[in-house]
Image (cartoon, rainbow, N blue to C red; front, side, top):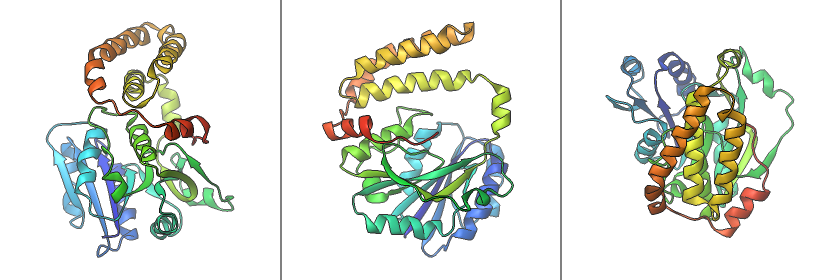
Amino acid sequence: MEISFLIVTKNRATELQFTLDRLVLECDFTKHEILVYIDGCLETEKIKEYYPQIRWFSNSYTISASPSRNFLYKQAKGEFFIGLDDDAHLISNSPIETVKQFFNKNQSLGIIAFLEIKGLIEKPEKNLIGIKKEEFLTTEFIGCGFAIRKTIYDQTSGFPNWIDIYGEESCLSIEVMNLGYDILFTNQVAVNHRVDIEKRKLQGKNYFRFQKQLQNSFRIYMVYYRKPFPRILRLLCHNFKKYGTSDSIYFKLYFRAIGNMIWNIPRLLKRRKKMDFITDSKLKTLKGISF
């Protein structure tokens, strides 16, 4: 098996169908496979019958994004994994062949980070017309579109079960770099991430994301960073000044997150997997990607 496409979905049956309708056209099912994990959503279960060529996995209750990925990626058989969000689809020409060429040309390449074209765009492919080729080594990828070698993924701990959502890509990135492999951003493979940007602007504050990202940033520093405490101090100060003092809900969530941090310290110390000096240097010097 050459390629495994991997998607975790929850409460987005319509968006998932849109993605799958396009993805099955890309696939030669003698060489490619599509695996989907339904994270506790009965509505999405109803569409399984329309895609018998897909390998489906599901749970009657939700386990969240990162544990779902952890489970799903263990089931995949392809030489290369391509991870997509349920609301993201490939829009570049010959994406499968391009991914294979990148990996076959460079044996030190662990992850390919795709270009994300964000928004509800009628013909997102037009955004790629005349685009100047851009490639650079980086330290992370966006979960809505990326590729990773199976052999390298299997050497890592995979997507962590100790993070639920927001930050799992950082964990996998650090572990891949710690194995001595590179992460390459390229705009030669692109996805349209179909998020409603205007709706998000109108929604404004995202309290759920705030608490999760604060807690998970702390966890990532504790598990992987060589000197976590200066970073944790900056994290806490920044988030208190920017969010904690802005309204009463942020204030409460800030201190709730700190309570969660303290409670989890013993568990995190047991998981400690300190990065090496080379990875630490890459995080400080390599160009980041745009989110």
